[in-house]
Amino acid sequence: MTGPLLELDRVTKRFGRVVIAEDLSLAVGPGQVVGIVGPNGAGKTSLFGLISGDLAPGAGEIRFAGRTVTRLDAAARCKLGVGRTYQVPRPFGDMTVFENLLIAAQQGGGLRRRASYAAAVEALDRTGISGQANVPAERLGLLQRKRLELARALATQPTLLLLDEVAGGLTDPEVAQLVEIVRDVNAAGTAVIWIEHVVRALTPVVSRLICLAGGKFVGDGDPATVLAEPAVREVFLGTEVTAALAGGSLEAGSEVKGDGAVGGERSNP
Amino acid sequence: MGWVNAIIQGVLTGGLYALFACGLSLMFGVMKVVNLAHGDLAVVAGYVAIGVITVTHIPVLWSFLIVVPLMALLGYVLQRTIIQGALDRSVLITLLVTFGLSVVIENGLLQFFSANSRAIGTGLSLVSGSFTLGSQIQIGYLLVVIFAVAVVVLLGLQYFLSRSRYGRLIRAVADDREAAQLAGADYRHVFGIAAALAFGTVALAGIAYGMYSQLSPTTGTDTILLFAFAAVVIGGLGSLWGTLLGGVVLGVAQQIGAQINISDEVLAGYIVFLAVLVLRPQGLISRRAQS
Image (tube, rainbow over the protein chains, first blue to last red):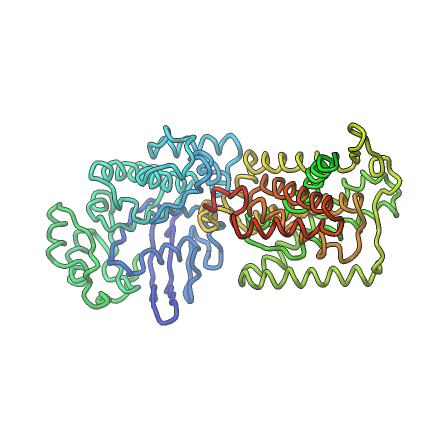
């Protein structure tokens, strides 16, 4: 494919007077890895909802793989290749881990019996939860639930993977493992958009960073450049950005000045 | 001996009540739809069976093969159109829509078939025949067969839900509709399949009741729906085997009531129903997913 994999064209979404996406335009190419940062309430998860089909935009158009998907529901977009994880994992609790993946492979991936079993096994291996294949999902701990959430998204055979704070609550070695998994997935050709508070998880793997605040993009580009932008520094508080640029840890705080909507929306090639 | 007889009869009647109830329980468990037209649909199935038998002259038991798939198809279509349309608005609208459906069906039946009662398969040895245990206990073949059918239906549903591809999908959608959509599952289609299953069991229940007793246009609301509700509440909402337990408890309570005083049969069933509502509102078998 020559054009962008995902395009948002002046997408707007409001809940009453609360604006969660204002005139957002965005293009993500095949195989690209994009990080999204921003304070709590910036509209990051809602942006994923708009892309995955959980939320219908009030205005604007969304295209995926050259097709307008604005009016398609989440299941149809998943079948086209949009995989998504939830910030708080939502496994099918009374099913085994393997059954969770089988559903994703058969429904989202459109795979038949044998191929779906192979895809489920592959997702287990990739995310390191093969040992839990036959455990009911409700018995898993937080880390394993997060891995299952990722595995289920992978089992749908996505060409675009939306990761919503998968690194939250993980230790440094666990974050490193996660980064390796994402690198692996991306190496196989899957584009990734990754929302993360833990910026140290993003910087090793993303080639582009977008900062979202108040439903608008306030920064977009090379991670180091974006983190150095005044509008982004204001969102993150300057000292923490300096630490991140120096390779330290950075977590987007809730201590946002104003609504953070400083830079206005951006359109990207 | 009269008490033993009452308990045996009650247990067997419980099979019929479980057939009434399992479709209601399935639709609530998966779609959160309380289908107030449930009993009327059973009566519709009974009348369709009577029509099919009258027109084609096929044996009574063969009518199941025609009516059950027909009702399942009707279930899928009704779910995808009227019920889904109501669900997209709110649960309350769904309740009103199924109530409206119930009124329309009941009056339609009254209009076309009059208020006369009709029975299915009178004269069949299966319907009128019985065997005796000892000297005082007489058991009808039909109740034993209905009980066996109920157990087979519940086993079949359990196997389908736990092992088959669509069964897994139904469980996934019942658990978390949004997450299932993100896994690529079209929940509306899955709801349709669950409704088809529920309507199929309703058809079985309607024809079975037509053979066991008599059907009239109002049987759906004044008997089948109420007993189905009672069995579901006693057994535990959303639990398949709970419907059999609920049906059996209701059946035994009714028969014991009748043993005390013949006019107390229905009353005794509702006293147990109320007692369960007060003392154990989650039902005797509470579904794990609800806890």
